[in-house]
Image (cartoon, rainbow, N blue to C red; front, side, top):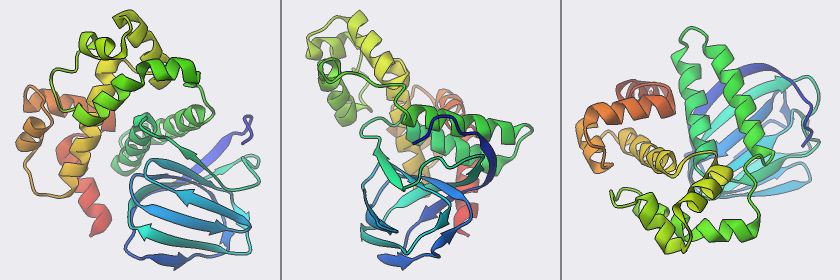
Length: 258
């Protein structure tokens, strides 16, 4: 992927919930596409390139004409797709980047989707800023050497299992890693660009988004299920992470599927 391109226009930001196991698409793309797959398992045939897509995968498709564009899905899923143009080709080929347990990039896509659909004053500049931030993350600004990553891996795994648990303090997480709290905080910040506390909150908010989508629970219930102290603090953190309130998020999501 080239590093000196300029994003000239964002055309649209869409949320898709795929309902078909296989689809064929037009072989000519007028715009670049940057996609975050939150769930599902796909095989994408794009020209001569075959992409394996798993949950938490970033997928880039360059504009232009290819011999074929087909997707076979072994598991259906949901994604956010950003259609945009640039002043020069970003990559000659399609590619994927696996975000793994790092939900930071996924949250950026959700913020971008919310800002685009909410269309508050200055939304377009906000969307451009978020898209550049996504590319910045893709290019490895949060790279952590394997030796250092392994030091905090027990904490990452514990958060993945128990992020709704209130006992996930820096002291506890550092102890299961066998390192000091200062070392934990420094490596976490270097890896994710976030403090441990903000990383845990981000996971809670992403989980809250999933609960809001099923329209089964009230906002108060979801705040309690995600272990926030009260619904007001939950709503404040949700808006900081996603860009809109939980109520607005429900409306935007519903409008996308009506």
